[in-house]
Image (tube, rainbow, N blue to C red; front, side, top):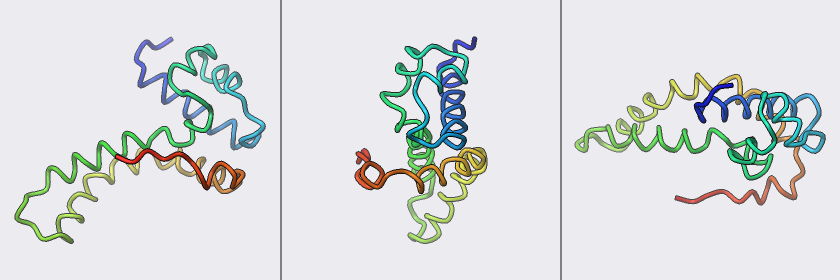
Length: 124
């Protein structure tokens, strides 16, 4: 069992997305996600407050990488070249997460509008 929380979180994310792809969002429980990831349900809840969070687990990393990429752009660049350069800094993360994004998109599309449309997105 890995002790690295990032490794466990990624395993939980993948397990959750796989199960939701197989059984739908409503047909998947936190207990099932934990079991597939090889951890306890308590460990699941240490990483995610609920199963909806599994769908957007990569959001914080994307935000961090995007902010870092923008911060690395020289201040003397015009807006469009600056955004293009920053985007190129984000591409490796997008590529690494491509398989998870492919699992995630149909789950979100198939999810009830009652919670997905009003998802409590964090504004920074």
